[in-house]
Amino acid sequence: MKTRLVGALVAGLVVCGLQIVPHTGRAADVPLEPGAQLTLQEAITLALRYHPARLAAQSEAGAAHERIGEAQSSLLPQVFGGAQYLRGTDNGVGDTSYLPMLGVARLPSRGRTNSTEMFDNYLMNVSAFQYLFDFGRTRGLIDQRRAEADVDLARLKLTELRLVFDVTQRYASLLAAHQTVKVFEKAVAQRREHLHEAEVKAQAGLKPEIDVYTANAELARAKLNLVDARNAADTGKVALDNAMGLGASAPDYTLAEVLTYEDITEPLDGYLATAFRQRPDLQMLEDEARAAGAEIQEYRSDYLPTVGATAGYSARGQELPAANNFDVGVLVTWPLFNGFLTDHEVAEAKLHQDAIRHAIEDLRQRIILQVKSGYLDWQASLERIHRAEQTVAASRGELDLAEKRYDAGLGNIIELTDAQRRFTEDEAGYINALAGFSIAKAALDRDTGAGWPHS
View 1: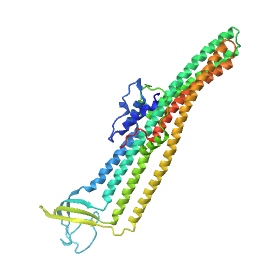
View 2: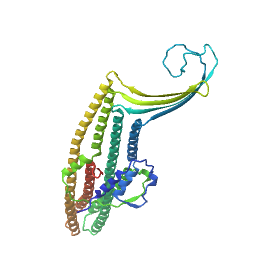
View 3: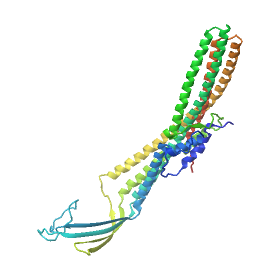
View 4: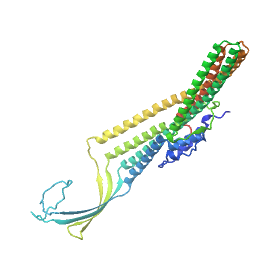
């Protein structure tokens, strides 16, 4: 069985299991020497290491992971400390009542009256609060943050999967472009020979002068096609450099793979099962549904009280040493009525979860469509290769016969140039069919999430 171009795809995908840690690599550090041979697996590895889209998704996943720690911090003691020095008057305000506000010092109810004399005031305090229980709000928030971190991790995998497809597609296209250049280089050389033959026969009076002009025109067309093919190869390299995330830092290199194909043996059902098990975007929605469920738990906790323990120490006074005070207690807060806010929050979270569940079902149907369509496209690409092989063999025989007829004086230049043109087009078509097979298989691997490690 022939080796498939995208056979290196699975091995490249294993790299996607990298842990979420900050990455400081730069394109200037690319481990690719000028003139080196580049395999598909190496190209995939470079993309997963250097492409900005993956680095951005990796950082987002890391940030989401840190939010788990933020939520868990509520389970630990919260300790606060403060110190204050204030110099001011100490005039009493009697039995006046007021609410504390920013910028207004808390004055004693008794004190000096109508005095402008100022006094030193000292304050130092340490206080601590320990969460005890809240009937699900804090635990629900932690579960929500964990589910959201899983969402971002799945999004990272989805980004990597798309990069793998993009690199594979660009790699196969560049291979096809290089082989197409060779086809037209051979066509130019072939047409030069036919032009020389036509010139010799015309000078000898064996062929009319129009044969020379016709052969010369075909040579010019072949040269034009060669220009286009070389330009396609140059732009194809730029596209592959971009897919690998290298940009202007990419050196010149050669491709180590060749375009080839293999028979299709695995049935469609296997690819569908793989897609439902491994598609990152499907996992994302399932994680979002988990997050919505945890959010419902958070909102429901507001129907019940929150309990915590507090303790503190303070030293304050107008002279040193200041007076010491200690306190310890239990705090209970219970939103008895908040304008039905909790009811609406719970209802909103439930509807959001329902919407995600519907989105999951919609995605599952689209996965069926994508995988079936991709599988049919892959089968068609294989059939196209077989037909292209037959076409190339037939057109090669047609060209050989046309050349022999022209050499023997039985054929004309139109018959020969038509055979030349068809053979060149058929060879280019066969190369495109090979590239199409590799790209179709890579698209199916993308649509099934093939190659992702899973438990």
